[in-house]
Length: 524
Ligand code: ADP
Image (cartoon, rainbow, N blue to C red; front, side, top):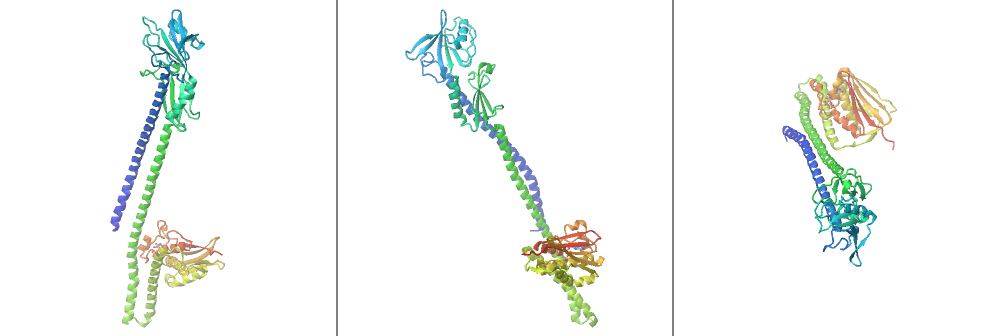
């Protein structure tokens, strides 16, 4: 694919990723918010449904207990409700109110003395005054008297003005313990499960009447509902006063809102991690694409450069050969021609070596022929191979190789090629200094070989890049120094294949020092 088209696709990918990822992030954020709100609403309406069913059952159970038995008999004459401890009739007599109770054996009403706890009701009935409020006692007028008023349960009916005062009242005393110990736990289990998720509390006149779990935090209940509410929807003026029961539901552990928020946070984290991952992979893909684009560009430059570099020695060789073949070279000039041909042939062969080693190193990460080598020998061989360039550059060579240096393990051809490249560069770019220094030393784990020159040096911006394949500093190209830009990348690959490194220190005008660091040969 042409590079321009490839670049266009890459730019389009970058733009799409940069626009799409944030847009996706915003959409996901909104969507998760909506899903969270919907989930909260759903859970809340399920909770409300269960709480309403609880209330209906509770109300029905207690109202049913207080209903007069079918057929109009007195309370207690029907099947005894498990939640009523006593049921009475208060009947007006000329001398006051008599208290009657059903004798379950004879099925007749028998009179009895007013118990102490009902005395305030008796006094109020006889005086026609408002009945005292007692949440456990339900007082209701029976049909036949004026129409019943009030709530018929915990709230006594208001006194009514009328031509005839009511004559019969039904009094039922609720069994508060049975309600607390049987009715409410049963309903709580039926509608809110075993208590592992929801905790139930019932308040009566503001006091805790029942609580399914002591660990639940009821300061902020998830739902609150009034039990035994006025069927007409009239809320009581003061719940506590009236003994109104309040049902409270609270999620165990965190509140419903906290749970929904935590779920939202988790969903956000998951989706943003996914997006992040997508972003990082896209970034990697883009980087890889850019790299390969750059590499393709470099390869093109390399092909152009290498063809040029090959053409020059080939042209020199061809014209020298022509001259020699045509016999136009005087016998005195033959050695000169020979030296020229040798120089250009070496240049060609070095270039071919570099290209072959470079492409071979692409597929090979270990030296092909590792041997135990003496550093002094490798240095000597490399210097000898570069003798021509050194002489032509007019460089004085200074070598400092201590005799006690330990051996290293490596491929002699590769290591010599690496050193030849460094020495060749020192001659090519450092000729102005007329000096070339090769030294070696050791530290705890490695042996280092440095190749230094006092030439033009390398600019800071080029230092980081000269080991990249095909990279050539602008100054080198401006000075029309021959080269392909792969010499140092070959050195680096050879160093790495031996488990070592190559570094450079240089500044413009101050020469350059390359250090090849190789691990010492292990004793085992
Ligand atoms: P080439 O020499 O064929 O251009 P290299 O990979 O050997 O390729 O070197 C890469 C670049 O590093 C060179 O083009 C040159 O700019 C710079 N360079 C290498 N060695 C030296 C040196 N001794 N002094 C100054 N610059 C150097």
